[in-house]
Amino acid sequence: MLSISQAAKTTGLSIKSIRHYEQIGLIQSPPRGENDYRYYPEAMIRQLHFIKSTKDAGFNLKECKELLLLCENKERSSADVKIIAQQKIEELQARIDQQQVLLNSLKALTKQCHGNSKAECPIIDAFIK
Amino acid sequence: MLSISQAAKTTGLSIKSIRHYEQIGLIQSPPRGENDYRYYPEAMIRQLHFIKSTKDAGFNLKECKELLLLCENKERSSADVKIIAQQKIEELQARIDQQQVLLNSLKALTKQCHGNSKAECPIIDAFIK
DNA sequence: CATAACCTTTACCCTTAGGGTAAAGTCAAA
DNA sequence: TTTGACTTTACCCTAAGGGTAAAGGTTATG
View 1 (cartoon, each protein chain N blue to C red):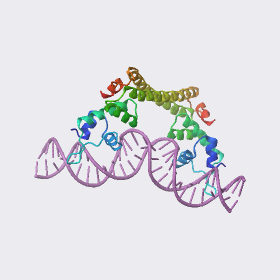
View 2 (view 1 turned 45 degrees about the vertical axis):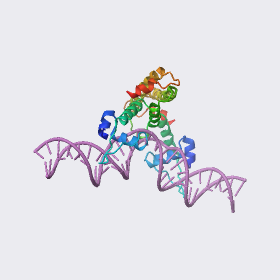
View 3 (view 1 turned 90 degrees about the vertical axis):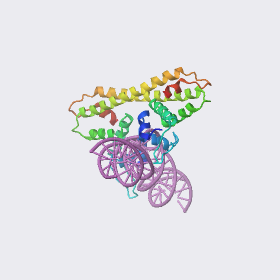
């Protein structure tokens, strides 16, 4: 049984995050000692590891929860997992594309700006329109 | 003098946003009518337009404020504007790169998943480690 | 054994950029 | 005049925690 700081250290999560996950129901409440401290059994440590991985992979906590449920469900079909992954792929792609558009126009504008001590500035001008 | 809904319509901002910008000091408080309604003179409408443009260009409100100040400062140097734009370019590029990494690994994983009715799933397996 | 250094708890406020809603007052048109 | 549209302030909500305080528990050292 690990204390919360030990759990944080081995999973790479912060103490705040672990408590937060409990609060929003992403993990269950761990057993408490007589001192009221949280003590995490191995099964919960494994869950926390899993959450860390999915979070690092770009999933939000709601999606992490779905994946965790699938992870622990032996009746799952890999199709269900794949659907979630594909949705995230599309979301990521859309975000990247959108940011790339912004980046390109900002680059174009910036290239036109002399960047000197004068007030005249194509970047500002573009925003005034 | 435009009412807040007229200001919102012509600038493409929401009423909530306009009030919010006032609250955080991004714009000044507009004059009020006897009815206590906000009425926006043309100069403020131009500011709101400018804010809409910079926001659409990917800047956050703090940066919008900096740009607005530069916009209204006739002593500005275009170099100052260019620095802000270049910082945003780097920030956007970093975010895109990071998301691209996530996207690539998620794509690789998803390609390996059969997406059938069986429980075996390389995506889940990757997250368990 | 005492005390310092560290750990844990709950609770509260903070972040971004507003959205949603309520209650109350105001304006304009039929 | 009444109805519908508009405005006001005020409050709670979002995601994912970070920071801090106050209080109490634990451990290591002298």
